[in-house]
Image (cartoon, rainbow, N blue to C red):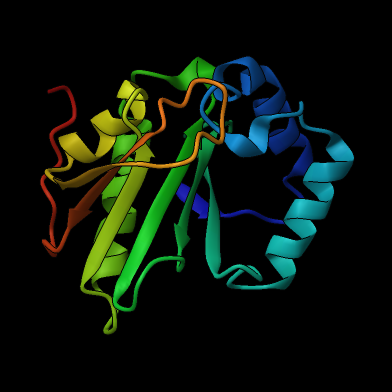
Length: 175
């Protein structure tokens, strides 16, 4: 299940990001430095005070049934009109369970139900096979592979853009 991050979540978020830092750093430019509790408090305070965030994003925590942070997912208004982008990260202890795929599916359905949204995209580096597996499992179409600046250590410099306009994307977890 995913819910908006709350001001009371920084300790749980910090613990998840700290445990997953080595796993996330190769792929996430924002993970260049290890997280700090003060930084997570600032981030969640900003996120809770502004909905959407100042950069046009809606940020959510992904939680297990026991309330553990399994990752984070966001819906971002940073591409062209009528389109939103989904971004995500996951706790290293929760990989391979389909959690991100199910959260991205639910967020895709919600985004495409908005009256002004006709397309949802997921962007990732071509070398990030785990990240690319999510839109593939959801039946998104690979619409482009183009050179882009390398922003994280493992980036190949080739960006993939996956997109869907299907109001109810397939959910092919386990494929």
